[in-house]
Image 1 (tube, rainbow, N blue to C red):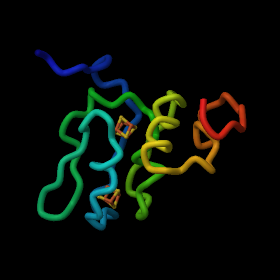
Image 2 (image 1 turned 30 degrees about the vertical axis):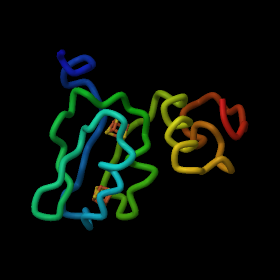
Image 3 (image 1 turned 180 degrees about the horizontal axis):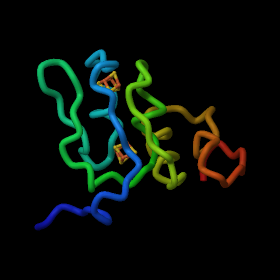
Amino acid sequence: MNRLSYLKDVTTLALDEQKCIGCGMCLEVCPHAVFGMQERRAQIIDRDACMECGACRRNCPAEAVTVQAGVGCAAAIINVILGRTDQPCCGGDTGCGSGKTCC
Ligand code: SF4
Ligand code: SF4
């Protein structure tokens, strides 16, 4: 079966490999396995699979990842998986402004 991917070359995802400290958090939180690790640095291995949920950016301790988040529900699911039920459902930057702890 083919992997799900979105429109080619449209995601706003970017990674500054020089800032990466190799913690692996982006690999852990990304629901679409966009990242891989090579020589203790994250790499984007499947860019077109990114759905711009923003979880990698929010969880990167080195601010090495940037992305314009656009899908708050995905972020909410990840927050719940990580036990972060005290956070707004979408992390506050995806536009719904509900202020709920979970959708
Ligand atoms: S924005 Fe979401 S889907 Fe895209 S790379 Fe980051 S965690 Fe993965
Ligand atoms: S979360 Fe940030 S610092 Fe950690 S591996 Fe990913 S890009 Fe590197």
